[in-house]
Length: 84
Image (cartoon, one colour):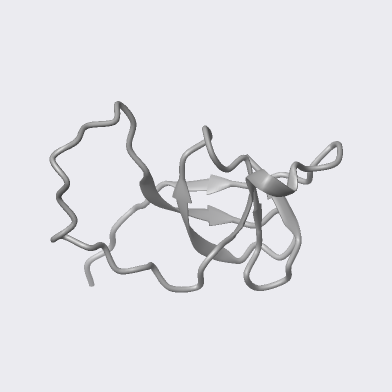
């Protein structure tokens, strides 16, 4: 049997109120990547698709990780807010 180790970001319970503009919901399945989306521009940062483990339910879900835009994520399983 083959095994693979992966890194998972672990969310934590928010210590204060979250900014609703920087709150995004996680996804149970990864979103498809559009490989034909080539506008020729380089913006200096990249979104990284990775997995997050919820602090409350321990569910592992997919996120687009970019702390410039999203600092908090709502778990798609238990709806708890996770801060990165």
